[in-house]
Length: 208
Image (cartoon, rainbow, N blue to C red):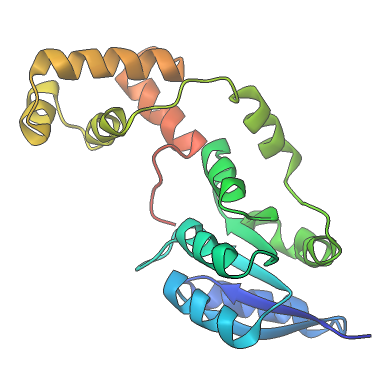
């Protein structure tokens, strides 16, 4: 039986080594390439044409969503599994919108990696139940506009309305209006609560 060819994409060498170690003892799966960022991922995909690609979300130069978009445009049948530490429904939705076939939390790699690779290779989509539930819960929620996202990031950085207004070249009243809209869309009680929700859901992405 021909082995499933796998490409691993992650900017942390230790994680790539861990994946290689898990795969090493299984004859039906073969690690054919590795990449440390999205640009390398595209190059390695073109070179190896893997059956399944394990794609980190947060990476330097080009992130996993962007790389997935590029690969899927060029290779519509590419099967990509997003690897992430985040349980946020927003990243998951973005990943599937970009064409990802599966979603795998790094915390469950040892337990679920092999089954996920085999399932995705066989044409079955994989997503952790808790993320599927979160996506369903927030499906009808309002989406933050680009300006609201900029305001939210400034709030997360600890900036007061006056500073945000100066930074974005808008009035303080406009900032207050954006903050009110953000709280309403996120169902937040105050600014701190809004930031907490945004980080949990993946609306604001911290470094991996």
